[in-house]
Length: 483
Image (cartoon, rainbow, N blue to C red; front, top):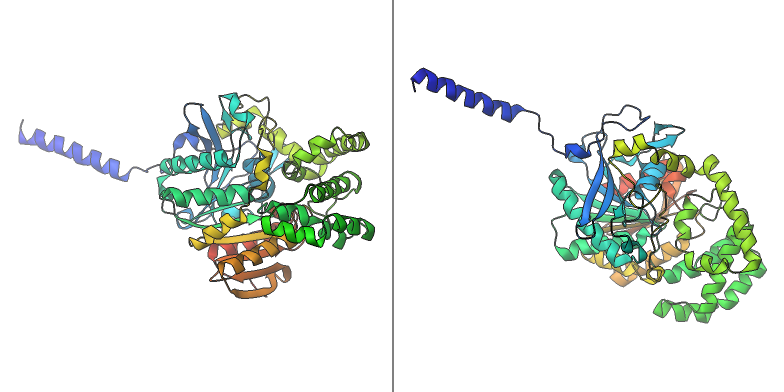
């Protein structure tokens, strides 16, 4: 080969190398990138959605929706959001009814002013399989699912998601959620630590969360009474069944007698059926869905029994009809479900319906072990705090189903057990010029409680600005503003 030919060949190699070096590299999986959702306004951030297989043998896969932070995503943390139920969609409820970048309006999407991806890269996961677009080709999986299965699948999902998005492997990582995610969040965080996977877990946050079934049963009665939802006579009857000695005995072994359990649950159902009040946000106009779908999963055992009681059956039927009327007008569940059942939307999301006829906010095929409700997870939160994980428990103060009073007491008791001193005494915090709620901090911001004034069971849906301020403070590790 002549020297001139050698130089030509070498030049071609060098040019090719420079082309390779300076070609734009797509850091994320192109197949999962969302070009644009139907009816979506133009945005500057990227969106991704698709499936992560968590069990090859059963062909079980979980659907996720990932939204980059609006500005400087490379420097902002990653947050995994999980809704409760069990069996309700984090994608539908969390992302599109609470704090995602968009909300459904008619056939289109509109921007959410208080979207949490202003402060973080947000990852929404539909879990377990059988929820939303997540599926198992082996349908027998749906017949029995529990906390252990859910946590294990969620951990496998995370490991494989980080393999797909390696840029986020070393990013500050937080897990947050609400309602039954009081189980999902701490249980997953505990598995992350125990498994020694390389995930930079910094903190957890749970809102209006089921952390202690004993508190879930015993705390609403006093809240109903103090907010004028039941009479003095009804409250006295309730406290007679769930009397002082019963409460003291129960607090030691965290169990409740059958009589106290039935009294509390039946009081809840009577209020839900006859009061005309939304127990998930007592100052709001009646809106029993989608929040009702989420919280009623916790009350399912009682609701199934009531189906057989003639005295309440007709009321339950009437309530169901009322739900159908209000959910389109007020709650947004109907239009959200309609949007996600559109073929063009599913195509844009890289989603499919497998084994179900339509996408629903809460699963209609999943049979979750109701006995898992009694698993205590407040202790798991304590073990996480001991391991150096920051923990926030927050509550919308207008939720009568998991009242802030019970959650506040749980956090205070946990702080004492851990030997954490109060570093920020109980005080008001502010959003703008208004009181946003009340807060108390223990240790070096290791454990904290915050209420959100005027917020419902799903706080970001009713008090978006205050919820956003709380979220921002949580990520920064700084106290909530006191003025």
